[in-house]
Image (cartoon, rainbow, N blue to C red; front, top):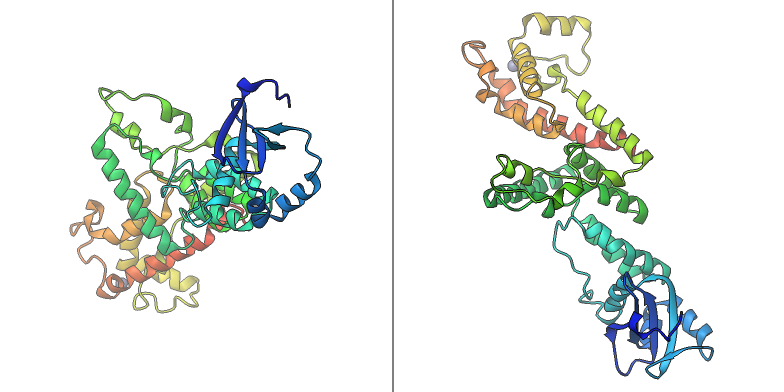
Length: 357
Ligand SMILES: [Zn+2]
């Protein structure tokens, strides 16, 4: 690196006048110089300790009166974040992000790679947790987060000019992050959220100005988008497999019956099914219910569709005229439990659907 090109050099933060070493790293524009304290870096990182040990006495270059150490391969922007952590580990420097920030996974990836290179395990763990915490790992967490996201979408929808994808986590970057940095527990929910996004709704459309006079501006702004183009072959295959599995899912109607209407449900044989099909009014009702709910269009969201089965009274196809007796009292009472069981099964199947096992 040639120090005779001062216009390329910029003192960047942190730059302490009493620091005893200058770290030099390439930035997206020019080169950044960080003046820091060796003892602090050594204290946090064995790798820095070894590096300064080797370099001691053999610095070829100086800047502002102190030795300069080149940081080849380290991006200055990432190094700045890492150093901010070294100086303020409890506040985590500038490494706090707003919840659900869709750029979070991409923003922290470079710093985590540096944290791994310089063996700063607490920083690695904190940042991985920071990204992972936006993704539910249980069905209960999924429900809570879903309600939060819906609330965000409602607010955005009222504002008309804001794009919802700027306020909710982005699944593709989260998937790549989870695979690189070892937090596979978030993959099922990230793939499942991705399943609800249309292939045509890509991240680059976010930058496109939407005119308020556009007749469907509100719809465009409120449609979640994904960074589809970052997906490579293996993950695309996971998507195809998972999306197909989700599309194919239907609850088996006889398992939605109460034990009163399907007493042999633990060990049914063909005759039992035959009796159900021919005689059970509850079974006929549930078949119609599943048909109606799943017939409303491909929303690729069986967890939500199952919930909508609980609102059976609102569907005109299930009116008193068509089904005078409706569901019997036993089936009414047990349906929420059976729906919860089906949803649990869907949730537990996600790793298999998306070939994550
Ligand atoms: Zn019944």
